[in-house]
Amino acid sequence: MKYSLVSARQKGRNRFELSFLQVLISPVVAAVLASSLAGCSKPPPPPQALSLYFVSDTRGRLVPCGCFSGQYGGLTRLKTVLDRVDPATSVMVDVGDAIRGVEDYNLMEYRYMLEAYAAMRFDALNLGQREAQLSAEQLRSLAQQSPVTLISANLLDSQTGTPVCAPWKMIQRGSFKIALVGVMDPRVPAENLGRGLALEKIEITLGKLLPELKRKADFVVLIAFTDEATLSRLAQDFYELDIILGGKVSQPAQALEKQNRSLVLYTGNEGRALGILRTRLDARGKLTGVDHEIRLLEDRIPEDDSIRVLAERYRNEVRSAKLSVDDPANLQENMVPGVKTVAAYVGTPACVGCHTGAAKVWQDSGHASAMETLISRKADADPNCIPCHTVGFGSPSGYRREMAGHRLADVGCESCHGPGSLHVEQRQNHQSVTFKFRPLGAGDCQQCHHGEFSRPFDWGHFWPQIQHGNETSNATASARSGGKL
Ligand code: HEC
Ligand code: HEC
Ligand code: HEC
Ligand code: HEC
Image 1 (cartoon, rainbow, N blue to C red):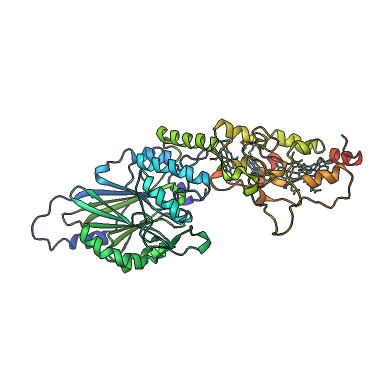
Image 2: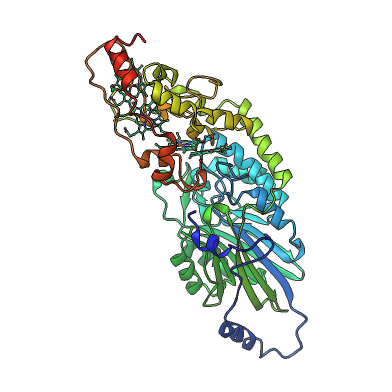
């Protein structure tokens, strides 16, 4: 588990509603906030509660993939948590990187995610660097059609210099107007920025925008897809910001920071950690009390059925759609440029006759039923799942979605050893053996066994379960008999 801090702390908790990492703001800061009110002459009306809920880095996780039990996260769980929240006193935003990637099916999935965010009553989604890989045209059309508001103040159309979607959104809670402003870190390599887009420095964007917003709003919240250091710097540079919610970070915040006039809190972690900032506003929109929490979306949180339905609708749509990955002409051989591909995938049945020992071990392992697993989840046509549950998906001779029940379905010999056509040819026809499979190790397993897709990978634990390769007798005999076994 990558996020050991919280998983360790949450041990012993057995109800998901329990909050942990709940830290009251330091007494010093509270005193400062209180003293800033002291000059007030007429008695202020009772403070109004306002809670901000935010996630970041969700990267397509409508539902957890289910690769092992005990997975965290997914909009399915986020919905369950946010359903308990009173929208009249809360603000809900996504800091960025909600989309998984820029493939056609990623975009399809993102549309269902936008529906999910709307169902959760999100006020706005800020664009992150993954969204900025789409083209200006795609973003404009998404922003127009989206059931939830997309914002970004510094992602601009490179032709016109104007934002491709709303730069900010004004919302009302009680008597207060709250401006939500979205920005993202402009340090993006040119090749990772979508067609027709340009990024402006955050400081320049805010310098232009904030004086106006400060006049219109009682309260300004910056939603910033950028790293910890930049979040601090923005707080130092712009007194107009009341709250900064961040997202492009290595780990969720361990503490709430008070910098200049701003409260800074951030989260990330593949959408598995929900940031919560609870505040009270006095009559003039000043913060009078604050606490915060980073709540992990643990596996005990029930998954919301309506979001599961959206995920199913995505999988149905992707099943019948014609996608770019379906056409071998669009697939790049992962080879040295200019050098013709040497070997192609031939499928496990081509190996089992000679390597009977290895074949038996394989047949008894989960690898041999990896496609069955996807079928049981109705995910067998989802390109998000297929690469690790088949042979060579994404390479011209590898598995394609039209190949249901094909010899390249499941994790086969060549998923680990690589394409075997030359090996089979040379071994079968008694040619001189010039082709050699490369030696494998734990790193080859971890291409699939990593992160949320696997229990923590430990060679000493995993390899013995599928150990093979010493049973060479059959292959050797086969070689002697010219492959006619
Ligand atoms: C990065 C590679 C990768 C991707 C992508 C991937 N999986 Fe997996 N999946 C695995 C691995 C590895 C395991 C075995 C994990 C383990 O044993 O701890 C697994 C196991 C599973 C299992 C559990 C099988 C069982 O019976 O124990 C399910 C269900 C599953 N995956 C579904 C999916 C779905 C659905 C998707 C797409 C949303 C997906 N996977 C995408 C690598 C992947
Ligand atoms: C015609 C019989 C035959 C077929 C079919 C065959 N092999 Fe082999 N394979 C051999 C022989 C013979 C060796 C030499 C080592 C030995 O004697 O086991 C070998 C060796 C290997 C090795 C060790 C590394 C190397 O390059 O020598 C791997 C890995 C391997 N085979 C995988 C495969 C895979 C994967 C397939 C299917 C794509 C396959 N084999 C199909 C006969 C065969
Ligand atoms: C191409 C992706 C991929 C690679 C590479 C891969 N695995 Fe897996 N592995 C999977 C998937 C997918 C599953 C789950 C299969 C299922 O049950 O549906 C899995 C399951 C397992 C299991 C669970 C036990 C079982 O039999 O169900 C073990 C053990 C395992 N893998 C070991 C390894 C080892 C060791 C390596 C490296 C030598 C490796 N895997 C490489 C995809 C991969
Ligand atoms: C999950 C990954 C994985 C799968 C699937 C897999 N192998 Fe292997 N195989 C390995 C690893 C790892 C080794 C040991 C390290 C090495 O020899 O490179 C190995 C070793 C071997 C060897 C001995 C290599 C040598 O140099 O002596 C042969 C032969 C072999 N595998 C054949 C097969 C065949 C045939 C299949 C399919 C029936 C298969 N393997 C499926 C990962 C895999």
